[in-house]
Length: 95
Image 1 (cartoon, rainbow, N blue to C red):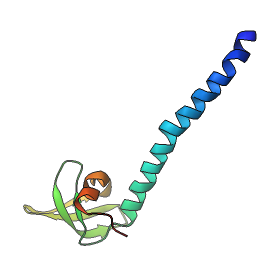
Image 2 (cartoon, helix red, strand yellow):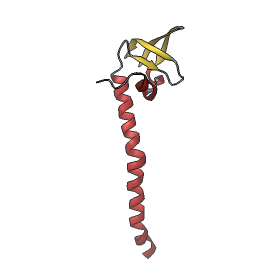
Image 3 (cartoon, rainbow, N blue to C red):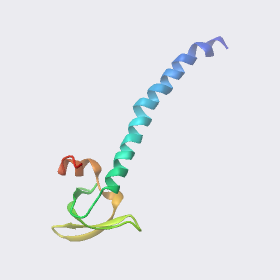
Image 4 (cartoon, rainbow, N blue to C red):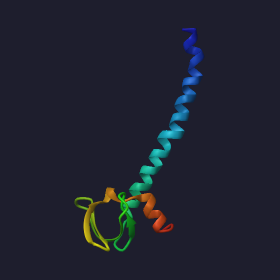
């Protein structure tokens, strides 16, 4: 039992580090992504996760999809297929 009490501070430190470096950043990223999806509007320029550059033409809240317009035409895609990081590079900070 003596070995366990000596390891307890180390285990607590590992849990704190795990929380601050893995869980907290992931929660922040999910919150940013949710805000991006909720603030999406017609006319926004976006990039999909597959690399397509497009403009949002229609938003459908019922099935969480959107219609985007590319040079090749219009496509209906899931909103989750839009890339937050790449779209932010395309559109500087929008407030």
